[in-house]
Image 1: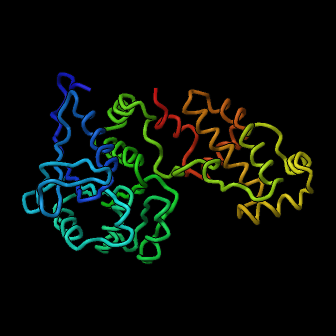
Image 2: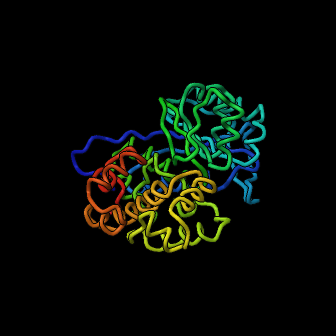
Image 3: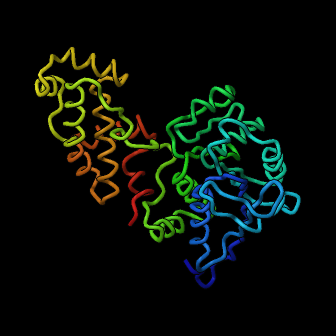
Length: 324
């Protein structure tokens, strides 16, 4: 990542991370590690930890962050990043809200990890905007702040100068996306390789796969049916075939999907196959191979599924998010 002769000088950008007692450590350390790797050969970022009163902050793990500074000690920063903590979903302390307000007023871009979105929502800056947070707290965010359009199943969302992300490891995806916006896809891809993670997942990608997101089925036929699809997404899972495998009528199986999973068999199977196709593409398969081995069949069917669920194309997904 070293600068080539003749390349223009790279401006070092300042990032302020807002921390406080009981902050989630990985919400801070994950994004910071992305920036550390981005700085290995060329200084690209300068970081500072900011807390309401400065000094030492105790994280949720019991480890401490030393030498944080108070907001009054910070001049202009390019980006403010607000780390999350579970207790923010219940109450945002006044001193934390004031800290973010002061910093955000001086920043060109403001980002949050996990429940850090609750601080921005409390300030009113997300009103009328689309935002996300950890899936477990999304309903609470929507209920507490009805003017915010909460997307509960996205990794990160950009709306104007505000960028919100899901929890924990999604902070890494967020920071890779900001790195790409600042310095290009090649730099972000090299950092992702160094961290042994895929090139950042699309912001609109689900926070978890359909298999993980599906609750355990209460009825034996539905449990058998979903297990069969997950085990081999590319097999023949037409409604009559699947119903015959679990010894119920197609109508009854459809009723079970609607009752327990609030969807149809066809839609659920398509999402499982799409999850599989995404992984195949990231593993190096061609678009045609991913379509065939995931059970989606044709390139056109795969393209429609990507457009419907991810708002992108298989080719664009492969170009941007495959680590090569």
